[in-house]
Length: 329
Image (cartoon, rainbow, N blue to C red; front, side, top):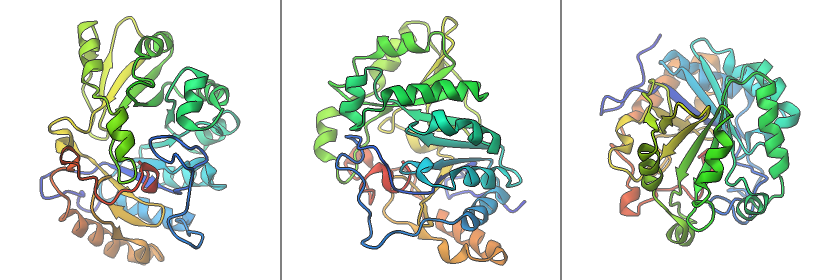
């Protein structure tokens, strides 16, 4: 194995978030309220299966053990099952995860599992169908719920559910969510609304800190779990009376970036050192031949020398990210 990817702050990178498309069919208020519009005038050329194999192979060679396949909505790719299989076949990759809006899960999650998918996250911003429609712009609540049931039928022991906290919309639904996970092995992850370049007004109107939820959990007997080295950024709490768990992702909290263990590659082949970074490092010219791997690894490691100690969200600096779908959230 080549040397572990490491930055100037001695953070090691076990986790790759790989976007395979920036297209999404939902119109979530906090991400793509006007629907998907290509960032380029001509139709974008997203990473091919061969390019995906080469980039994940390089990361695996340098110690990455977990790959999350993201979008946009990754299941919009017709070759999505093949992408899962390609990533799962890379030596050293032990976890293959995806984040999906869930609309295709009921029909396809069994084949994703068979292809090598080990972990699945589903975005569900409300358990009330009307509120779900208000936030996502799509009347697909029942299909998403059926997809979660199908994931358990397919053999997933746990499903993670992502919920973006929105003040005056879903932030008051904690009792309903807790009741939902009491008898279900769901890790419900409340994600603080993050400011992006196109969402300043919405952020100011709907941002709410996860601290109040954390205080409620601790006061009611929930206990913080320890992390493993390829876990994501959530603080995860468990309770002896609940089959499910609660995760909190609070990017505005002090030292949030201290334990950063993940890098991002966009659907167009750019390495992003941070979701809120200022620029990307183009890798695509080095994804054309297997013989370019050493040069590819060197470019990624060179890029890591530029990784900042932290994002600057608390200062209102959102970097170059126009919306969360653009580089995979």
